[in-house]
Length: 188
Image 1 (cartoon, rainbow, N blue to C red):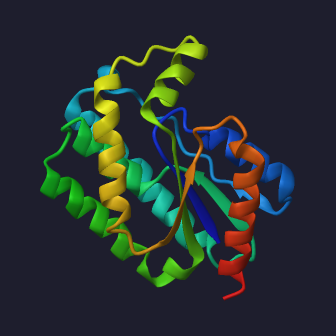
Image 2: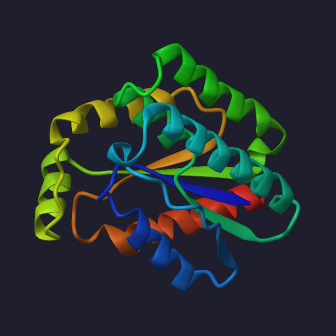
């Protein structure tokens, strides 16, 4: 089974993955190559880089699905759609076509994929950036990112759950919910 964590930065993806790993020994993390920020590469180079990373990830997913283990990914094709469209790296149609292509590539194993979408109120997200002394230059884009996540989640063929991480107490409750959902899907 593959569990893909999605959501904007500072919604608790890394913390939730770490806590989940503590509670489920059989979890394996799929490491993805570090993405470059848009300022570091040209638009064309970035699109090629994304394509290569996601194509390798598709191969990884297809090869892992037959194993009786749980694999975790920190973002995948839904984030690709959201960020490419929000920051106008590609047109809506090109971005949406890429999203649909990934979904079609994985349709045979859709029963074994769970998307966990973590979200928080925009003011909470901005405060988390400030608390960690990180610069969030594109806070004006936050609403668009959230809106685009909500749009694309309605289009996905995969099982998904949404989890509000606005409160500081989200971790334990949410990890239990994720474990239960994973168990339910595996037992189908």
